[in-house]
Image (cartoon, rainbow, N blue to C red; front, top):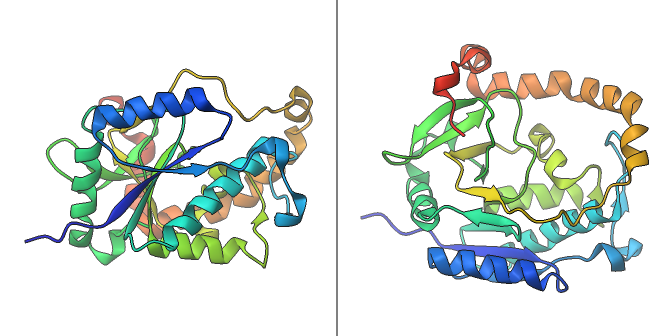
Length: 265
């Protein structure tokens, strides 16, 4: 008989975002999910003595991105202080599918059955319409998959193992959290953290139709083009080496030419 993995659901939510908290309470009630709320780090009250910036992104970071990053760091520290095996981290703008809880628990129950090569560190629950490489079946509806071209640029919802949280925090804490990019972009550089990041497909969440809390000045977008080229060049070879190393060249190549009707969104 399988031992049920211990996991906790963590909701990242700003104290002043009461409307978003109400949204998520309804979503959790719909899916019968209990959760622990993490008071997000507010961009309006950032304390620069509590973190460092070592910018490797294609433009300057904005306070909202820094607050979001530190909120995820705070969540992972809370997780490691618990006795749970997994952390289900959800941002407060997620719409959950009706069978969200069942799909998550199936994926966790099947974790130990995965080969060591395919045991994920982070399992993202939103994939958009990216092409994927099938890793394993979860049940007759869901699979574990890996994006063939790039890790989804989102942190709306994901499951972390304890080992993944430890590796991530150990990498950025020297001794203060050192932020190089927005957190969703940082996790696209999985090779820097020695993380295997997969997806549970089809997606279990979708973004709620709410306004973003991370405000980016238009001038930053306009002035970033030369830096963007350098940014993409710097990660081009490490990214493809990482993908080929994990999946083999054939699966990596096939993910580029997968037929439209074979995509999972």
